[in-house]
Amino acid sequence: MPNKELMNKLAKLAVRVGANVQKNQVVFIRATTEAKEIVREVVEEAYLAGAKRVIVGWNDDYVTHSGYIHMDKEELQNIPSWLIDQYKDLVNQGACLISIVSPMPGLNADVDSKKAQAAEFAAQKALSFVREHSMGNKTQWTIIGASNPIWAKKVFPNLGEEEAVEKLWDAIFDASRVRLTSDPIKEWEIHNETLLKHNQLLNRYNFKHLHFKNNKGTDLIVELIKDHVWAGGGEHAANGSYFNPNIPTEETFTMPYKFGTRGKVYATKPLNYQGKLIEDFWLEFKDGKVVDFDAKKEKDTLENLLNNDEGSRYIGEIALISHDSPISNTNILFLNTLFDENASCHMALGRAYPMNVKNGMNLSLDELIKQGYNNSMVHSDFMFGSEDMEIIGLTQDGKEIKVFSKGNFVI
Ligand code: ZN
Ligand code: ZN
Image (cartoon, rainbow, N blue to C red):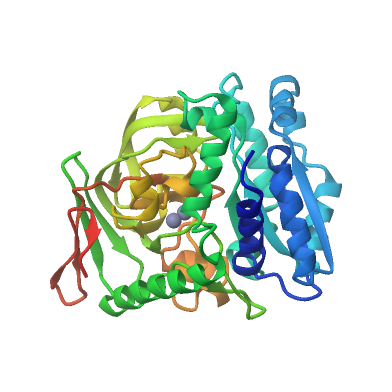
Protein backbone atom coordinates (compact mmCIF):
# COMPACT_ATOMS: atom_id res chain seq x y z
CA MET A 1 0.00 0.00 0.00
CA PRO A 2 1.28 3.48 -0.79
CA ASN A 3 1.97 5.73 2.16
CA LYS A 4 -1.32 7.42 3.13
CA GLU A 5 0.37 10.56 4.41
CA LEU A 6 2.35 11.04 1.21
CA MET A 7 -0.76 10.46 -0.87
CA ASN A 8 -2.58 13.10 1.10
CA LYS A 9 0.35 15.50 0.71
CA LEU A 10 0.29 14.98 -3.07
CA ALA A 11 -3.48 15.50 -3.16
CA LYS A 12 -3.15 18.71 -1.18
CA LEU A 13 -0.33 19.86 -3.45
CA ALA A 14 -2.51 19.25 -6.52
CA VAL A 15 -5.31 21.32 -5.00
CA ARG A 16 -3.37 24.17 -3.37
CA VAL A 17 -0.38 24.57 -5.72
CA GLY A 18 -1.42 22.69 -8.88
CA ALA A 19 -4.91 24.01 -9.55
CA ASN A 20 -4.89 26.53 -6.68
CA VAL A 21 -8.61 25.96 -6.14
CA GLN A 22 -10.40 29.18 -5.24
CA LYS A 23 -13.24 29.66 -2.76
CA ASN A 24 -16.63 28.82 -4.31
CA GLN A 25 -15.05 27.46 -7.47
CA VAL A 26 -16.32 24.35 -9.23
CA VAL A 27 -13.60 21.71 -9.59
CA PHE A 28 -13.62 19.10 -12.31
CA ILE A 29 -11.37 16.08 -11.85
CA ARG A 30 -10.56 13.89 -14.82
CA ALA A 31 -9.31 10.51 -13.70
CA THR A 32 -9.33 6.81 -14.36
CA THR A 33 -10.71 4.25 -11.96
CA GLU A 34 -7.13 3.06 -11.37
CA ALA A 35 -6.53 6.28 -9.45
CA LYS A 36 -9.62 6.14 -7.24
CA GLU A 37 -7.69 6.27 -3.94
CA ILE A 38 -5.96 9.55 -4.67
CA VAL A 39 -9.04 10.92 -6.43
CA ARG A 40 -10.94 10.65 -3.13
CA GLU A 41 -8.13 12.51 -1.35
CA VAL A 42 -8.13 15.25 -3.99
CA VAL A 43 -11.92 15.63 -3.76
CA GLU A 44 -11.71 16.02 0.02
CA GLU A 45 -8.83 18.50 -0.20
CA ALA A 46 -10.66 20.52 -2.85
CA TYR A 47 -13.66 20.91 -0.55
CA LEU A 48 -11.33 21.88 2.31
CA ALA A 49 -9.90 24.56 0.01
CA GLY A 50 -13.40 25.98 -0.40
CA ALA A 51 -14.64 24.38 -3.61
CA LYS A 52 -18.34 24.88 -4.22
CA ARG A 53 -18.74 21.52 -5.96
CA VAL A 54 -16.28 18.84 -7.03
CA ILE A 55 -17.20 16.69 -10.01
CA VAL A 56 -15.26 13.62 -11.10
CA GLY A 57 -15.29 12.57 -14.75
CA TRP A 58 -14.37 8.90 -14.44
CA ASN A 59 -12.83 6.88 -17.20
CA ASP A 60 -11.91 3.22 -17.11
CA ASP A 61 -9.22 2.13 -19.54
CA TYR A 62 -10.57 -1.44 -19.76
CA VAL A 63 -13.99 -0.13 -20.71
CA THR A 64 -12.40 2.15 -23.29
CA HIS A 65 -10.38 -0.80 -24.58
CA SER A 66 -13.53 -2.93 -25.02
CA GLY A 67 -15.09 -0.07 -26.95
CA TYR A 68 -12.09 0.21 -29.24
CA ILE A 69 -12.28 -3.53 -29.96
CA HIS A 70 -16.04 -3.95 -30.40
CA MET A 71 -17.52 -0.66 -31.55
CA ASP A 72 -17.32 0.23 -35.20
CA LYS A 73 -15.28 3.23 -36.27
CA GLU A 74 -18.29 5.43 -37.06
CA GLU A 75 -19.84 4.88 -33.64
CA LEU A 76 -16.51 5.56 -31.94
CA GLN A 77 -16.40 8.89 -33.71
CA ASN A 78 -19.86 9.83 -32.49
CA ILE A 79 -19.33 12.05 -29.44
CA PRO A 80 -22.52 12.20 -27.36
CA SER A 81 -24.05 15.66 -27.05
CA TRP A 82 -24.54 15.27 -23.27
CA LEU A 83 -20.79 14.94 -22.87
CA ILE A 84 -20.20 18.12 -24.86
CA ASP A 85 -22.90 19.88 -22.82
CA GLN A 86 -21.27 18.81 -19.56
CA TYR A 87 -17.99 20.41 -20.61
CA LYS A 88 -19.77 23.54 -21.87
CA ASP A 89 -21.38 23.87 -18.47
CA LEU A 90 -18.01 23.47 -16.70
CA VAL A 91 -16.38 26.10 -18.90
CA ASN A 92 -19.30 28.50 -18.33
CA GLN A 93 -19.01 28.05 -14.59
CA GLY A 94 -15.28 28.79 -14.65
CA ALA A 95 -14.43 25.39 -13.22
CA CYS A 96 -10.77 24.54 -12.70
CA LEU A 97 -9.48 21.22 -13.98
CA ILE A 98 -7.42 18.58 -12.24
CA SER A 99 -6.28 15.63 -14.36
CA ILE A 100 -4.96 12.55 -12.63
CA VAL A 101 -3.13 10.41 -15.13
CA SER A 102 -2.55 6.74 -14.54
CA PRO A 103 -1.51 5.39 -17.92
CA MET A 104 -1.66 1.74 -18.94
CA PRO A 105 1.13 1.31 -21.46
CA GLY A 106 0.52 -1.55 -23.87
CA LEU A 107 -3.15 -2.04 -22.91
CA ASN A 108 -4.25 -1.08 -26.41
CA ALA A 109 -1.56 -3.08 -28.20
CA ASP A 110 -4.24 -5.26 -29.86
CA VAL A 111 -6.33 -2.29 -30.98
CA ASP A 112 -6.34 -1.07 -34.56
CA SER A 113 -4.41 2.17 -34.06
CA LYS A 114 -6.29 3.92 -36.89
CA LYS A 115 -9.57 3.17 -35.15
CA ALA A 116 -8.32 4.40 -31.77
CA GLN A 117 -6.93 7.49 -33.39
CA ALA A 118 -10.19 8.23 -35.20
CA ALA A 119 -12.03 8.02 -31.86
CA GLU A 120 -9.53 10.24 -30.11
CA PHE A 121 -9.50 12.72 -32.97
CA ALA A 122 -13.29 13.00 -32.94
CA ALA A 123 -13.35 13.56 -29.18
CA GLN A 124 -10.60 16.17 -29.40
CA LYS A 125 -12.41 17.97 -32.17
CA ALA A 126 -15.74 18.00 -30.36
CA LEU A 127 -14.09 19.16 -27.14
CA SER A 128 -11.53 21.54 -28.65
CA PHE A 129 -13.19 24.43 -26.78
CA VAL A 130 -12.21 22.79 -23.49
CA ARG A 131 -8.60 22.48 -24.60
CA GLU A 132 -8.50 26.11 -25.76
CA HIS A 133 -9.99 27.11 -22.43
CA SER A 134 -7.35 25.30 -20.36
CA MET A 135 -4.32 25.66 -22.61
CA GLY A 136 -5.14 29.33 -23.02
CA ASN A 137 -5.06 29.56 -19.19
CA LYS A 138 -8.60 30.88 -19.07
CA THR A 139 -8.87 28.79 -15.91
CA GLN A 140 -6.44 26.99 -13.59
CA TRP A 141 -5.56 23.43 -14.50
CA THR A 142 -3.10 20.83 -13.37
CA ILE A 143 -1.96 17.28 -14.01
CA ILE A 144 -0.60 14.80 -11.46
CA GLY A 145 0.23 11.10 -11.74
CA ALA A 146 -1.03 7.97 -9.96
CA SER A 147 0.49 4.49 -9.90
CA ASN A 148 -1.35 1.39 -11.13
CA PRO A 149 -0.33 -2.29 -11.52
CA ILE A 150 0.03 -2.33 -15.32
CA TRP A 151 2.07 0.85 -15.43
CA ALA A 152 4.17 -0.18 -12.41
CA LYS A 153 5.00 -3.61 -13.88
CA LYS A 154 6.17 -1.93 -17.12
CA VAL A 155 8.42 0.40 -15.17
CA PHE A 156 9.68 -2.29 -12.77
CA PRO A 157 9.31 -5.59 -14.67
CA ASN A 158 11.44 -7.52 -12.19
CA LEU A 159 9.33 -6.73 -9.13
CA GLY A 160 6.15 -8.36 -7.92
CA GLU A 161 2.98 -6.43 -8.67
CA GLU A 162 2.40 -5.02 -5.20
CA GLU A 163 6.00 -4.01 -4.72
CA ALA A 164 6.12 -2.41 -8.19
CA VAL A 165 2.97 -0.36 -7.53
CA GLU A 166 4.44 0.93 -4.30
CA LYS A 167 7.82 1.67 -5.84
CA LEU A 168 6.17 3.64 -8.64
CA TRP A 169 4.18 5.61 -6.08
CA ASP A 170 7.42 6.42 -4.28
CA ALA A 171 8.98 7.58 -7.54
CA ILE A 172 5.95 9.78 -8.25
CA PHE A 173 6.16 11.32 -4.77
CA ASP A 174 9.90 11.91 -5.16
CA ALA A 175 9.56 13.44 -8.61
CA SER A 176 6.73 15.66 -7.35
CA ARG A 177 8.86 16.90 -4.43
CA VAL A 178 6.48 15.26 -1.97
CA ARG A 179 8.37 13.99 1.05
CA LEU A 180 7.52 13.08 4.64
CA THR A 181 10.20 15.35 6.02
CA SER A 182 9.25 18.58 4.28
CA ASP A 183 6.29 20.69 3.29
CA PRO A 184 5.75 20.20 -0.45
CA ILE A 185 3.91 23.52 -0.71
CA LYS A 186 6.99 25.39 0.55
CA GLU A 187 9.27 23.25 -1.66
CA TRP A 188 7.25 24.31 -4.68
CA GLU A 189 7.50 28.00 -3.80
CA ILE A 190 11.28 27.71 -3.91
CA HIS A 191 11.20 25.57 -7.06
CA ASN A 192 8.96 28.06 -8.89
CA GLU A 193 11.39 30.84 -8.07
CA THR A 194 14.29 28.91 -9.61
CA LEU A 195 12.35 28.21 -12.79
CA LEU A 196 11.32 31.86 -12.99
CA LYS A 197 14.98 32.93 -12.87
CA HIS A 198 15.79 30.66 -15.83
CA ASN A 199 12.88 32.03 -17.83
CA GLN A 200 13.96 35.61 -17.19
CA LEU A 201 17.53 34.93 -18.28
CA LEU A 202 16.51 33.25 -21.53
CA ASN A 203 13.95 35.96 -22.25
CA ARG A 204 16.69 38.56 -21.92
CA TYR A 205 18.88 36.74 -24.45
CA ASN A 206 15.95 36.64 -26.90
CA PHE A 207 17.71 34.07 -29.11
CA LYS A 208 17.03 33.87 -32.81
CA HIS A 209 17.65 30.16 -32.82
CA LEU A 210 19.06 27.29 -30.76
CA HIS A 211 21.46 24.75 -32.21
CA PHE A 212 21.33 21.27 -30.59
CA LYS A 213 24.09 18.74 -31.05
CA ASN A 214 25.05 15.42 -29.46
CA ASN A 215 26.90 12.19 -30.26
CA LYS A 216 23.73 10.25 -30.91
CA GLY A 217 23.40 12.18 -34.16
CA THR A 218 21.17 15.08 -33.24
CA ASP A 219 22.14 18.15 -35.22
CA LEU A 220 19.16 20.43 -35.19
CA ILE A 221 18.46 24.12 -35.49
CA VAL A 222 15.24 25.34 -33.90
CA GLU A 223 14.34 28.90 -34.83
CA LEU A 224 12.28 30.59 -32.14
CA ILE A 225 9.17 32.59 -32.95
CA LYS A 226 9.59 36.37 -32.95
CA ASP A 227 8.65 37.82 -29.54
CA HIS A 228 8.78 34.36 -27.95
CA VAL A 229 8.36 34.00 -24.21
CA TRP A 230 10.16 31.38 -22.12
CA ALA A 231 7.88 29.93 -19.48
CA GLY A 232 7.86 27.13 -16.94
CA GLY A 233 6.77 26.55 -13.41
CA GLY A 234 3.75 28.51 -12.24
CA GLU A 235 1.45 30.53 -14.46
CA HIS A 236 -1.38 33.00 -14.02
CA ALA A 237 -4.91 32.13 -15.06
CA ALA A 238 -7.31 34.74 -16.45
CA ASN A 239 -8.90 35.02 -12.98
CA GLY A 240 -5.50 36.04 -11.60
CA SER A 241 -4.76 32.86 -9.64
CA TYR A 242 -1.25 31.49 -9.79
CA PHE A 243 -1.20 27.77 -10.60
CA ASN A 244 1.13 24.95 -11.65
CA PRO A 245 -0.07 23.12 -14.78
CA ASN A 246 2.21 20.14 -14.26
CA ILE A 247 3.28 18.30 -11.15
CA PRO A 248 6.13 17.54 -11.51
CA THR A 249 7.71 20.10 -13.79
CA GLU A 250 11.36 20.97 -14.37
CA GLU A 251 11.12 22.55 -17.78
CA THR A 252 11.76 25.95 -19.26
CA PHE A 253 10.00 26.03 -22.61
CA THR A 254 9.08 28.30 -25.48
CA MET A 255 7.53 28.41 -28.94
CA PRO A 256 9.47 27.54 -32.08
CA TYR A 257 8.74 29.40 -35.30
CA LYS A 258 6.57 26.94 -37.21
CA PHE A 259 8.68 26.94 -40.39
CA GLY A 260 12.09 27.35 -38.77
CA THR A 261 13.26 23.90 -37.63
CA ARG A 262 15.88 22.12 -39.71
CA GLY A 263 18.15 19.11 -39.34
CA LYS A 264 17.86 15.80 -37.58
CA VAL A 265 16.84 14.87 -34.05
CA TYR A 266 17.22 11.50 -32.34
CA ALA A 267 14.83 10.66 -29.51
CA THR A 268 16.51 9.47 -26.32
CA LYS A 269 13.42 7.96 -24.71
CA PRO A 270 10.44 6.05 -26.11
CA LEU A 271 7.26 7.96 -26.92
CA ASN A 272 4.05 6.47 -25.50
CA TYR A 273 1.29 7.31 -27.99
CA GLN A 274 -2.19 5.81 -27.70
CA GLY A 275 -0.90 3.04 -25.49
CA LYS A 276 1.90 2.10 -27.89
CA LEU A 277 5.60 2.65 -27.39
CA ILE A 278 7.47 4.22 -30.28
CA GLU A 279 11.13 3.39 -29.72
CA ASP A 280 14.51 4.42 -31.13
CA PHE A 281 13.21 6.95 -33.58
CA TRP A 282 14.51 9.98 -35.41
CA LEU A 283 12.91 12.82 -37.32
CA GLU A 284 14.34 14.98 -40.05
CA PHE A 285 13.02 18.50 -40.48
CA LYS A 286 13.06 20.91 -43.38
CA ASP A 287 11.47 24.36 -43.12
CA GLY A 288 9.83 23.22 -39.90
CA LYS A 289 8.23 20.11 -41.36
CA VAL A 290 9.09 16.47 -40.70
CA VAL A 291 10.21 15.25 -44.14
CA ASP A 292 11.69 11.89 -43.11
CA PHE A 293 11.58 9.63 -40.08
CA ASP A 294 12.25 6.13 -38.84
CA ALA A 295 11.63 4.06 -35.72
CA LYS A 296 12.91 0.67 -34.65
CA LYS A 297 9.56 -0.07 -32.99
CA GLU A 298 6.03 1.14 -33.82
CA LYS A 299 6.98 3.06 -36.93
CA ASP A 300 3.32 2.84 -38.04
CA THR A 301 2.21 4.51 -34.84
CA LEU A 302 4.73 7.29 -35.39
CA GLU A 303 3.42 7.67 -38.92
CA ASN A 304 -0.16 7.91 -37.61
CA LEU A 305 0.89 10.58 -35.17
CA LEU A 306 2.66 12.56 -37.90
CA ASN A 307 -0.29 12.22 -40.27
CA ASN A 308 -2.88 13.27 -37.71
CA ASP A 309 -3.33 16.66 -39.36
CA GLU A 310 -1.34 19.40 -41.08
CA GLY A 311 0.20 20.67 -37.83
CA SER A 312 1.31 17.31 -36.45
CA ARG A 313 4.35 17.33 -38.74
CA TYR A 314 5.55 20.60 -37.19
CA ILE A 315 6.65 21.30 -33.64
CA GLY A 316 4.91 23.58 -31.16
CA GLU A 317 7.22 23.46 -28.15
CA ILE A 318 10.90 23.35 -27.34
CA ALA A 319 11.90 22.72 -23.72
CA LEU A 320 15.24 22.85 -21.94
CA ILE A 321 15.99 20.72 -18.89
CA SER A 322 19.36 20.03 -17.38
CA HIS A 323 20.35 16.38 -17.53
CA ASP A 324 21.19 16.72 -13.87
CA SER A 325 17.55 17.01 -12.74
CA PRO A 326 15.73 15.21 -9.89
CA ILE A 327 13.75 12.97 -12.23
CA SER A 328 16.70 12.22 -14.46
CA ASN A 329 18.74 11.36 -11.37
CA THR A 330 16.23 8.69 -10.32
CA ASN A 331 17.23 6.89 -13.53
CA ILE A 332 13.70 5.58 -13.83
CA LEU A 333 12.01 5.52 -17.21
CA PHE A 334 8.40 6.29 -16.28
CA LEU A 335 7.14 5.60 -19.80
CA ASN A 336 4.94 8.66 -19.46
CA THR A 337 5.67 12.16 -20.68
CA LEU A 338 4.43 13.97 -17.56
CA PHE A 339 7.46 12.49 -15.80
CA ASP A 340 9.94 11.61 -18.52
CA GLU A 341 9.66 14.99 -20.23
CA ASN A 342 11.04 16.47 -17.03
CA ALA A 343 14.12 14.31 -17.21
CA SER A 344 15.34 15.62 -20.50
CA CYS A 345 15.20 18.30 -23.17
CA HIS A 346 12.13 17.71 -25.28
CA MET A 347 10.00 19.06 -28.07
CA ALA A 348 6.38 18.52 -28.97
CA LEU A 349 4.89 17.61 -32.30
CA GLY A 350 1.71 19.56 -32.78
CA ARG A 351 0.16 22.63 -31.30
CA ALA A 352 1.98 25.37 -29.46
CA TYR A 353 0.98 27.20 -26.28
CA PRO A 354 -0.30 30.75 -26.98
CA MET A 355 1.36 32.01 -23.79
CA ASN A 356 4.78 31.34 -25.35
CA VAL A 357 4.51 34.45 -27.53
CA LYS A 358 4.08 38.03 -26.32
CA ASN A 359 0.40 38.95 -25.93
CA GLY A 360 -0.43 35.46 -27.27
CA MET A 361 -3.31 34.96 -24.84
CA ASN A 362 -5.13 37.94 -26.35
CA LEU A 363 -4.64 36.96 -29.98
CA SER A 364 -7.11 34.98 -32.05
CA LEU A 365 -6.06 31.65 -33.53
CA ASP A 366 -5.79 33.28 -36.97
CA GLU A 367 -3.55 36.04 -35.64
CA LEU A 368 -1.35 33.49 -33.90
CA ILE A 369 -1.06 31.38 -37.05
CA LYS A 370 -0.02 34.47 -39.05
CA GLN A 371 2.93 34.91 -36.68
CA GLY A 372 4.10 31.33 -37.17
CA TYR A 373 2.18 29.53 -34.43
CA ASN A 374 1.57 25.84 -35.07
CA ASN A 375 -1.95 24.56 -34.57
CA SER A 376 -2.88 20.89 -34.38
CA MET A 377 -5.18 18.44 -32.64
CA VAL A 378 -2.13 16.78 -31.12
CA HIS A 379 0.56 17.92 -28.74
CA SER A 380 2.95 15.01 -28.32
CA ASP A 381 6.15 15.52 -26.35
CA PHE A 382 9.22 13.43 -26.95
CA MET A 383 12.59 13.45 -25.25
CA PHE A 384 15.87 14.04 -27.02
CA GLY A 385 18.13 15.38 -24.25
CA SER A 386 21.28 13.51 -23.33
CA GLU A 387 24.25 13.79 -20.99
CA ASP A 388 26.39 15.12 -23.84
CA MET A 389 23.89 17.62 -25.29
CA GLU A 390 25.46 20.88 -26.45
CA ILE A 391 23.26 23.88 -27.18
CA ILE A 392 24.41 27.10 -28.77
CA GLY A 393 22.06 30.07 -28.89
CA LEU A 394 22.33 32.63 -31.66
CA THR A 395 21.42 36.16 -30.60
CA GLN A 396 19.51 38.53 -32.89
CA ASP A 397 22.79 40.34 -33.68
CA GLY A 398 24.63 37.13 -34.57
CA LYS A 399 26.48 36.33 -31.34
CA GLU A 400 26.83 32.69 -30.28
CA ILE A 401 26.14 31.91 -26.63
CA LYS A 402 26.71 28.52 -25.05
CA VAL A 403 23.46 27.57 -23.33
CA PHE A 404 24.12 23.88 -22.54
CA SER A 405 27.34 22.00 -22.14
CA LYS A 406 27.54 18.26 -21.34
CA GLY A 407 23.78 18.08 -20.94
CA ASN A 408 23.36 20.94 -18.46
CA PHE A 409 22.56 24.64 -18.40
CA VAL A 410 25.70 26.77 -18.40
CA ILE A 411 24.12 30.21 -18.59
ZN1 ZN B 1 7.16 20.55 -22.20
ZN1 ZN C 1 4.59 19.62 -24.08
